[in-house]
Image 1 (tube, rainbow, N blue to C red):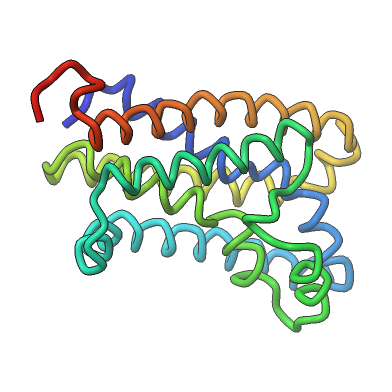
Image 2 (image 1 turned 180 degrees about the horizontal axis):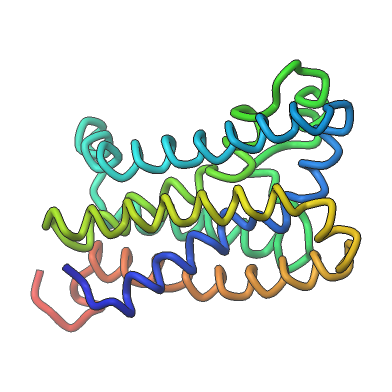
Length: 214
């Protein structure tokens, strides 16, 4: 089990990666043709989808890495680069193409339901969030550790649910400029997290850099 400050750091990192505020414009455009009842159902499905996707990553992600013979240090470097690319896009107040391309966004609007794909995944619980959960799970092996992260994921999904429910009000009050400012702040936080992932992975792959024998 980690210190509580570390779990808070994990939660803030996930919140920055998922960035529900940055998803508000796309959510509103993708649900423009839905009535109030349909939109509420879509929001419920998005929150449930995010919860299930990240919980699966938490409990089975490391086993998947083992199956493919991928070391956790290699995954730290790869995941760090992935998060860094997302952070750079967020610093420019853009949705990273790692999450969703413009073509995918256009096609998804035409689908009957957009709750699970593309809103829950990959827009919110995308590769960056999944990578972060897997790396967080590897920090300790106790049941309490996994339960705390699972609780963090549930709390994160509740935040997503609340933000999407309030999305019309949020957009009308703070507008695109306010959302972009928040996205840039989250991008700055993600940049630091990504550098930490990469540095930790490189030290694990090349122990001599950490001043310890191989």
